[in-house]
Image (cartoon, helix red, strand yellow):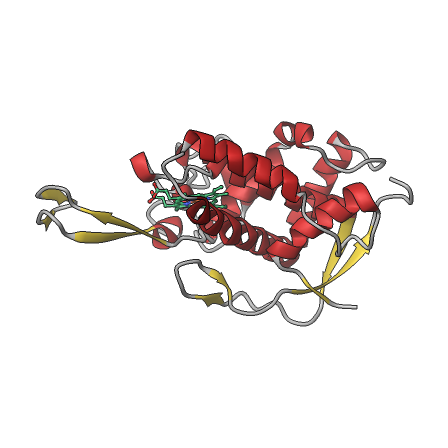
Length: 255
Ligand code: HEM
């Protein structure tokens, strides 16, 4: 039966698989884990209100998961390669744990590639605090600027074949246009830059990594119907259409 794969409910999948052995597409996200992390983030950034953190932190991660799963469904070769990496590192008799994540280099490339093409916050607002000139353009003090992260990720001057989903471009020496963007945590603009960059980045990356790996490790996925990659423009750049999929459990019974 086709299932609407949305990032929020994918959280549920992880929890269901790990602890309840429910139908894996029901259940509940490890919300306590998320709450614990939220508290940790708040301790560090205690000037922020919880509402801000939850708003900024939930849709963004969920939408990132949806785009990544869409790209994996569109590129079975890449999906298979992620599954193979998981089979080698984790095996097939248990689910992925957070401790496994640093041992999954190909997964990292897939995340980078997906976030390059689908930064969920496509425009980052800034204001010129003083008169300045950048790229020959003069900005008066107080000018509002929107940095277009979406366009930068698809700039043909920066990336070889920018519209292609090709995670291997991030391999050292691949010549794929990755340049010095070898680390998401230090290089990607998908989380902004400078003093106001995303304070939830590390938590977000861990959340996305664990959800996607559990989905891909525990299930084979098939599309139900056409895959429409249209975007719904807004503050959060989400999929315009539901992602309809058919999952099949692939771990042996009891694992
Ligand atoms: C994949 C998931 C996420 C993405 C792509 C993302 C991206 C971003 C971006 C681009 C900004 C603006 C940065 C700038 O202006 O330079 C931002 C700000 C922010 N993010 Fe995230 N974010 C994600 C997840 C999270 C999570 C999980 C939290 C909290 C737990 C969070 C909390 C915040 C907050 C509070 C701000 C405002 C920071 C400020 O204005 O100083 N984000 N995020």
